[in-house]
Image (cartoon, rainbow, N blue to C red; front, side):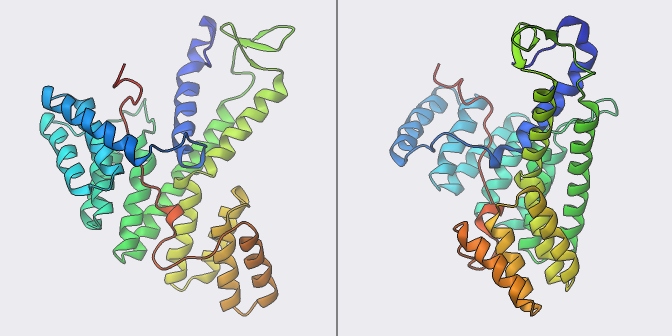
Length: 317
Protein backbone atom coordinates (compact mmCIF):
# COMPACT_ATOMS: atom_id res chain seq x y z
CA UNK A 1 0.00 0.00 0.00
CA UNK A 2 2.71 2.47 0.96
CA UNK A 3 4.81 3.22 -2.10
CA UNK A 4 6.86 6.31 -2.74
CA UNK A 5 6.86 8.19 -5.98
CA UNK A 6 9.98 7.70 -8.09
CA UNK A 7 11.80 10.78 -6.79
CA UNK A 8 11.68 9.46 -3.23
CA UNK A 9 13.31 6.11 -3.94
CA UNK A 10 16.31 6.87 -1.76
CA UNK A 11 14.10 6.96 1.31
CA UNK A 12 12.07 3.87 0.62
CA UNK A 13 14.41 0.97 1.47
CA UNK A 14 14.73 2.10 5.09
CA UNK A 15 11.02 2.85 5.46
CA UNK A 16 10.00 -0.43 3.87
CA UNK A 17 12.36 -2.41 6.10
CA UNK A 18 11.23 -0.66 9.25
CA UNK A 19 7.54 -1.06 8.40
CA UNK A 20 8.06 -4.77 7.78
CA UNK A 21 10.01 -5.12 11.03
CA UNK A 22 7.43 -3.34 13.13
CA UNK A 23 4.63 -5.29 11.51
CA UNK A 24 6.46 -8.54 12.20
CA UNK A 25 7.27 -7.83 15.83
CA UNK A 26 3.70 -6.82 16.53
CA UNK A 27 2.22 -10.08 15.25
CA UNK A 28 1.36 -11.66 18.63
CA UNK A 29 -0.54 -8.57 19.74
CA UNK A 30 -2.62 -7.75 16.65
CA UNK A 31 -6.04 -9.15 15.84
CA UNK A 32 -6.13 -12.40 13.86
CA UNK A 33 -8.69 -14.35 11.92
CA UNK A 34 -10.40 -17.14 13.80
CA UNK A 35 -8.08 -20.15 14.13
CA UNK A 36 -9.02 -23.20 12.07
CA UNK A 37 -11.27 -25.77 13.69
CA UNK A 38 -10.13 -29.33 14.33
CA UNK A 39 -12.29 -30.51 11.43
CA UNK A 40 -10.72 -27.94 9.09
CA UNK A 41 -7.24 -28.96 10.22
CA UNK A 42 -8.05 -32.61 9.55
CA UNK A 43 -9.18 -31.68 6.04
CA UNK A 44 -5.98 -29.69 5.52
CA UNK A 45 -3.94 -32.60 6.83
CA UNK A 46 -5.46 -34.97 4.27
CA UNK A 47 -4.80 -32.53 1.43
CA UNK A 48 -1.21 -31.82 2.48
CA UNK A 49 -0.43 -35.53 2.86
CA UNK A 50 -1.64 -36.06 -0.70
CA UNK A 51 0.34 -33.08 -2.00
CA UNK A 52 3.55 -34.19 -0.25
CA UNK A 53 3.07 -37.76 -1.53
CA UNK A 54 2.92 -36.38 -5.08
CA UNK A 55 5.79 -33.93 -4.61
CA UNK A 56 7.93 -34.89 -1.60
CA UNK A 57 10.55 -32.25 -2.35
CA UNK A 58 8.21 -29.26 -2.30
CA UNK A 59 9.16 -26.87 0.49
CA UNK A 60 5.75 -25.25 0.80
CA UNK A 61 3.87 -28.52 1.00
CA UNK A 62 6.25 -30.07 3.53
CA UNK A 63 6.23 -27.02 5.75
CA UNK A 64 2.44 -26.77 5.55
CA UNK A 65 2.11 -30.43 6.48
CA UNK A 66 4.38 -29.83 9.46
CA UNK A 67 2.40 -26.75 10.47
CA UNK A 68 -0.89 -28.61 10.33
CA UNK A 69 0.46 -31.50 12.40
CA UNK A 70 1.83 -28.94 14.88
CA UNK A 71 -1.56 -27.24 15.21
CA UNK A 72 -3.17 -30.63 15.78
CA UNK A 73 -0.70 -31.34 18.58
CA UNK A 74 1.16 -34.11 16.69
CA UNK A 75 4.53 -32.66 17.57
CA UNK A 76 6.72 -35.73 16.98
CA UNK A 77 5.46 -36.18 13.43
CA UNK A 78 5.57 -32.42 12.78
CA UNK A 79 9.22 -32.42 13.82
CA UNK A 80 10.03 -35.22 11.37
CA UNK A 81 8.57 -33.23 8.48
CA UNK A 82 10.27 -29.97 9.47
CA UNK A 83 13.60 -31.81 9.62
CA UNK A 84 13.04 -33.17 6.11
CA UNK A 85 13.20 -29.54 4.98
CA UNK A 86 16.71 -29.27 6.42
CA UNK A 87 17.73 -32.32 4.38
CA UNK A 88 16.59 -30.56 1.21
CA UNK A 89 19.03 -27.68 1.77
CA UNK A 90 21.84 -29.00 3.98
CA UNK A 91 24.14 -26.18 2.89
CA UNK A 92 22.11 -23.41 4.54
CA UNK A 93 19.36 -23.33 7.14
CA UNK A 94 16.21 -21.38 6.46
CA UNK A 95 15.02 -19.23 9.36
CA UNK A 96 11.42 -20.44 8.99
CA UNK A 97 12.53 -24.08 9.19
CA UNK A 98 14.83 -23.44 12.15
CA UNK A 99 12.11 -21.53 13.96
CA UNK A 100 9.48 -24.21 13.36
CA UNK A 101 11.87 -26.95 14.49
CA UNK A 102 12.67 -24.90 17.60
CA UNK A 103 9.00 -24.35 18.43
CA UNK A 104 8.23 -28.04 18.05
CA UNK A 105 11.13 -28.99 20.29
CA UNK A 106 9.85 -26.45 22.81
CA UNK A 107 6.40 -28.05 22.77
CA UNK A 108 8.11 -31.40 23.36
CA UNK A 109 9.84 -29.77 26.38
CA UNK A 110 13.28 -30.35 24.83
CA UNK A 111 14.35 -26.89 25.90
CA UNK A 112 18.12 -27.18 25.42
CA UNK A 113 17.71 -28.36 21.82
CA UNK A 114 15.04 -25.72 21.24
CA UNK A 115 17.39 -23.04 22.59
CA UNK A 116 20.03 -23.88 19.99
CA UNK A 117 17.48 -23.91 17.18
CA UNK A 118 15.97 -20.57 18.21
CA UNK A 119 19.43 -19.01 18.08
CA UNK A 120 19.96 -20.68 14.69
CA UNK A 121 16.75 -19.04 13.49
CA UNK A 122 18.00 -15.66 14.68
CA UNK A 123 21.28 -16.15 12.78
CA UNK A 124 19.87 -17.88 9.70
CA UNK A 125 19.73 -14.79 7.49
CA UNK A 126 23.11 -13.38 6.51
CA UNK A 127 23.45 -9.70 7.25
CA UNK A 128 25.99 -7.35 5.76
CA UNK A 129 27.13 -4.12 7.35
CA UNK A 130 24.97 -2.21 4.87
CA UNK A 131 21.84 -4.27 5.44
CA UNK A 132 21.28 -4.98 9.13
CA UNK A 133 17.62 -5.81 8.79
CA UNK A 134 15.52 -7.73 11.27
CA UNK A 135 13.80 -10.92 10.23
CA UNK A 136 11.11 -13.13 11.73
CA UNK A 137 13.86 -15.41 13.01
CA UNK A 138 15.49 -12.46 14.77
CA UNK A 139 12.24 -11.19 16.16
CA UNK A 140 11.17 -14.40 17.85
CA UNK A 141 14.36 -16.46 17.89
CA UNK A 142 16.24 -14.56 20.56
CA UNK A 143 13.15 -14.07 22.69
CA UNK A 144 12.30 -17.75 22.83
CA UNK A 145 15.95 -18.69 23.26
CA UNK A 146 15.81 -16.64 26.46
CA UNK A 147 12.55 -18.35 27.45
CA UNK A 148 14.29 -21.72 27.02
CA UNK A 149 17.11 -20.56 29.30
CA UNK A 150 14.53 -19.48 31.88
CA UNK A 151 12.81 -22.86 31.60
CA UNK A 152 16.07 -24.71 32.25
CA UNK A 153 16.95 -22.59 35.28
CA UNK A 154 19.71 -20.58 33.60
CA UNK A 155 18.31 -17.37 35.00
CA UNK A 156 21.37 -15.13 34.74
CA UNK A 157 21.95 -16.16 31.11
CA UNK A 158 18.29 -15.56 30.32
CA UNK A 159 18.41 -12.09 31.89
CA UNK A 160 21.53 -11.23 29.88
CA UNK A 161 20.00 -12.34 26.56
CA UNK A 162 16.80 -10.45 27.34
CA UNK A 163 18.78 -7.31 28.16
CA UNK A 164 20.53 -7.50 24.79
CA UNK A 165 17.20 -8.09 23.05
CA UNK A 166 15.48 -5.18 24.80
CA UNK A 167 18.34 -2.82 23.96
CA UNK A 168 18.31 -3.90 20.30
CA UNK A 169 14.56 -3.45 19.95
CA UNK A 170 14.56 -0.11 21.78
CA UNK A 171 17.21 1.13 19.35
CA UNK A 172 15.06 -0.05 16.44
CA UNK A 173 12.03 1.87 17.71
CA UNK A 174 14.11 4.98 18.35
CA UNK A 175 15.66 4.85 14.88
CA UNK A 176 12.27 4.35 13.27
CA UNK A 177 10.76 7.32 15.09
CA UNK A 178 13.81 9.50 14.37
CA UNK A 179 14.45 8.66 10.71
CA UNK A 180 10.92 8.15 9.42
CA UNK A 181 9.96 11.81 9.34
CA UNK A 182 7.36 13.73 7.40
CA UNK A 183 10.09 15.68 5.65
CA UNK A 184 11.87 12.52 4.46
CA UNK A 185 8.80 11.38 2.48
CA UNK A 186 7.49 12.59 -0.86
CA UNK A 187 3.74 13.11 -0.84
CA UNK A 188 1.42 14.64 -3.35
CA UNK A 189 -0.84 17.11 -1.60
CA UNK A 190 -4.42 16.93 -2.82
CA UNK A 191 -7.78 18.21 -1.61
CA UNK A 192 -8.42 14.78 -0.09
CA UNK A 193 -5.10 14.61 1.73
CA UNK A 194 -1.61 13.22 1.19
CA UNK A 195 -1.34 10.86 -1.76
CA UNK A 196 1.54 8.44 -2.24
CA UNK A 197 1.84 6.93 -5.72
CA UNK A 198 -1.85 7.39 -6.36
CA UNK A 199 -2.99 6.08 -2.97
CA UNK A 200 -4.43 8.30 -0.26
CA UNK A 201 -2.35 7.42 2.79
CA UNK A 202 -2.87 10.27 5.29
CA UNK A 203 -5.26 13.18 5.64
CA UNK A 204 -2.55 15.55 6.84
CA UNK A 205 0.85 15.80 8.53
CA UNK A 206 -0.71 15.14 11.92
CA UNK A 207 -2.12 11.88 10.58
CA UNK A 208 1.32 10.81 9.41
CA UNK A 209 2.89 11.62 12.78
CA UNK A 210 0.10 9.78 14.62
CA UNK A 211 0.77 6.76 12.39
CA UNK A 212 4.45 6.73 13.39
CA UNK A 213 3.59 6.91 17.09
CA UNK A 214 1.03 4.14 16.71
CA UNK A 215 3.48 1.84 14.95
CA UNK A 216 6.08 2.36 17.68
CA UNK A 217 3.50 1.70 20.39
CA UNK A 218 2.33 -1.50 18.68
CA UNK A 219 5.91 -2.65 18.42
CA UNK A 220 6.58 -2.00 22.08
CA UNK A 221 3.50 -3.95 23.08
CA UNK A 222 4.67 -6.96 21.08
CA UNK A 223 5.70 -10.20 22.70
CA UNK A 224 9.41 -9.83 22.13
CA UNK A 225 9.59 -6.37 23.72
CA UNK A 226 6.82 -6.20 26.30
CA UNK A 227 7.24 -9.91 27.09
CA UNK A 228 10.99 -9.54 27.36
CA UNK A 229 10.54 -6.92 30.07
CA UNK A 230 8.14 -9.15 32.01
CA UNK A 231 10.36 -12.24 31.80
CA UNK A 232 13.42 -10.21 32.73
CA UNK A 233 11.41 -9.01 35.74
CA UNK A 234 10.78 -12.65 36.65
CA UNK A 235 14.49 -13.35 36.27
CA UNK A 236 15.49 -10.42 38.45
CA UNK A 237 12.99 -11.45 41.10
CA UNK A 238 14.53 -14.94 41.17
CA UNK A 239 17.94 -13.29 41.49
CA UNK A 240 16.68 -11.34 44.54
CA UNK A 241 16.70 -8.04 42.70
CA UNK A 242 13.18 -6.94 43.56
CA UNK A 243 13.87 -3.29 42.75
CA UNK A 244 15.11 -4.21 39.27
CA UNK A 245 12.14 -6.53 38.79
CA UNK A 246 9.72 -3.72 39.65
CA UNK A 247 11.50 -1.37 37.23
CA UNK A 248 10.97 -3.89 34.43
CA UNK A 249 7.30 -4.28 35.31
CA UNK A 250 6.91 -0.50 35.31
CA UNK A 251 8.55 -0.41 31.87
CA UNK A 252 6.16 -3.10 30.64
CA UNK A 253 3.15 -1.24 32.05
CA UNK A 254 4.31 2.03 30.52
CA UNK A 255 3.75 0.56 27.04
CA UNK A 256 0.84 -1.72 27.91
CA UNK A 257 -1.00 -0.42 30.98
CA UNK A 258 -3.85 -2.85 30.25
CA UNK A 259 -1.74 -5.94 30.99
CA UNK A 260 -3.44 -7.95 33.71
CA UNK A 261 -0.32 -10.11 33.97
CA UNK A 262 2.02 -7.21 34.74
CA UNK A 263 -0.49 -5.69 37.17
CA UNK A 264 -0.90 -9.05 38.92
CA UNK A 265 2.86 -9.60 39.30
CA UNK A 266 3.28 -6.05 40.56
CA UNK A 267 0.57 -6.56 43.16
CA UNK A 268 1.98 -9.93 44.22
CA UNK A 269 5.46 -8.52 44.77
CA UNK A 270 4.15 -5.41 46.52
CA UNK A 271 2.29 -7.70 48.89
CA UNK A 272 5.51 -9.60 49.64
CA UNK A 273 7.17 -6.26 50.33
CA UNK A 274 4.32 -5.51 52.77
CA UNK A 275 3.08 -2.54 50.72
CA UNK A 276 -0.47 -3.77 51.12
CA UNK A 277 -2.43 -0.71 50.01
CA UNK A 278 -0.56 -0.47 46.69
CA UNK A 279 -0.66 -4.23 46.30
CA UNK A 280 -4.44 -4.43 46.69
CA UNK A 281 -4.90 -1.63 44.18
CA UNK A 282 -2.73 -3.38 41.60
CA UNK A 283 -4.34 -6.79 42.17
CA UNK A 284 -7.80 -5.25 41.91
CA UNK A 285 -6.83 -3.65 38.61
CA UNK A 286 -5.59 -7.05 37.34
CA UNK A 287 -8.82 -8.73 38.43
CA UNK A 288 -10.88 -6.03 36.71
CA UNK A 289 -9.16 -6.97 33.46
CA UNK A 290 -10.09 -10.60 33.95
CA UNK A 291 -6.65 -11.83 34.96
CA UNK A 292 -6.96 -14.69 37.41
CA UNK A 293 -3.32 -15.40 38.25
CA UNK A 294 -0.46 -17.66 37.24
CA UNK A 295 -0.60 -21.42 37.85
CA UNK A 296 3.09 -22.25 38.05
CA UNK A 297 5.68 -22.00 35.30
CA UNK A 298 5.43 -19.14 32.85
CA UNK A 299 2.20 -17.30 32.04
CA UNK A 300 0.75 -18.59 28.78
CA UNK A 301 0.71 -15.16 27.15
CA UNK A 302 4.52 -15.10 27.32
CA UNK A 303 4.73 -18.36 25.35
CA UNK A 304 2.72 -17.63 22.22
CA UNK A 305 3.88 -20.43 19.92
CA UNK A 306 2.64 -20.19 16.34
CA UNK A 307 4.41 -21.93 13.43
CA UNK A 308 5.61 -19.73 10.60
CA UNK A 309 4.36 -20.02 7.03
CA UNK A 310 6.05 -19.23 3.76
CA UNK A 311 2.98 -18.06 1.87
CA UNK A 312 -0.30 -19.22 3.39
CA UNK A 313 -2.46 -17.95 0.51
CA UNK A 314 -0.47 -19.76 -2.17
CA UNK A 315 -1.14 -23.39 -1.45
CA UNK A 316 -4.61 -24.02 -2.81
CA UNK A 317 -4.83 -21.46 -5.59
